[in-house]
Image (cartoon, rainbow, N blue to C red; front, top):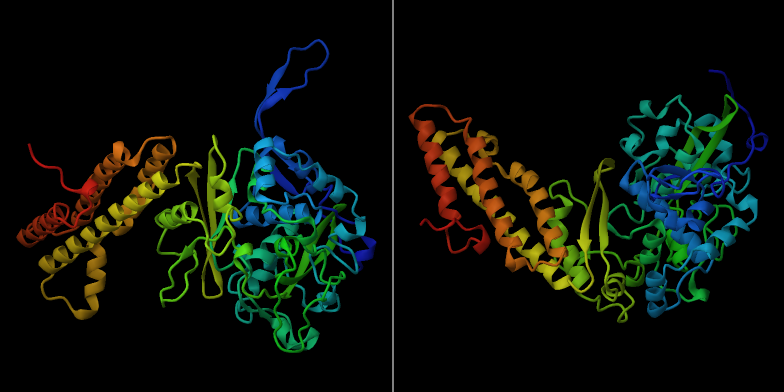
Length: 544
């Protein structure tokens, strides 16, 4: 494959995400326009790549974005919302928002505004004001640019990049649409840590990357039937004069200017939702190159970007608040390696059932959703799990929500969580008995590993996830939790708890000590599942 590496960005044609096919999206099935003399047919659902203008103009034709990671989907949705705010394509009041949602208000105003924007504002490879990037890094690209892997959160590895750099020198160029989406994801979710930038480039603060605005919390997206429905559900009402400034490029003019990297670390509040959803959380620069006649990205620089002040509640309407471990005011729920998202769904349903006292009545996301009728909404929670400066996994789950059934959903979620938590506690107690009976005199250093051998909690949580999904689906469909769903869920978790313990105890030796340990562990579990502390739906059923 021949490669024609060009020295100047000026020599390459521009790449404009408004018209270039920058995002795959799932299309709705529908009638196909027949050719003359042919019978009409039904177009099956499929995937179509579209530019930003088409995504907005034909938002009702798409059911959802198709993304490589949940975080990438959130980042693109946020960018589309930033465009809607910049175009003043937004309801001004909660009452207008409800009309927008119920009447499927078209997004043509945003599409037209975007279409009529000056082309130089939307050029990913503009030599002076590249879209979403910091052109001040250009003098350092030739000597210090690395492969496109640095742009992708999952491929970067340790964000303290003075140690492991080999994988960043990826010789394979990246398609501009993938680079564009990865750049948006970095702005929203980038992790903290030292960058490979040098202090003598633009200042000592350039090397210290702050955590992105969504990098430390669960972002909840209300998911509708179509892309347009999803955007309307999540767009917060805003007066036309308060939408704020769209961030085209680091070097584009904006009120108040950008932070510099030579003085103290400077943070700011967004001047409106357009600013927030297009916030430049990183200084990024992409180098274009021609590969077999196609524009690609072969080198990348990434460093510190802008820093947000703590956001007021109006900019955290989707946040699910959870108690701090250290006490004090609740904080937005964080993703966790130890707890799957469905285990925190009780907090999500609590947020959906309770109006935020810090927001005016009817203005919060969950307050607005509660005012809708005769429809279902999916609440998709997305988070990025990291270990120190390394991203380890994306987590995502969708929970059913039906306006008017908030109390029933919260009831089912609360009781379902209690059932599983108690079952896990019972399994721990049984594992302790099995260890102590099988190994009465272990070395202190071995006690924890021996306990893990018999502790079946991981299998419980893995097996309970589907049962919990069915529980919430039944309740969202209209069945009261106490009329059958919780009893059925309790029976399933009871049986699952017995099975996973038996599977762990199968590793006990076949002799008398092993048989005794197995019998006592099973008896301990049975006792705990029959005790007064056991949730009623989980209890050992009475014998006839």
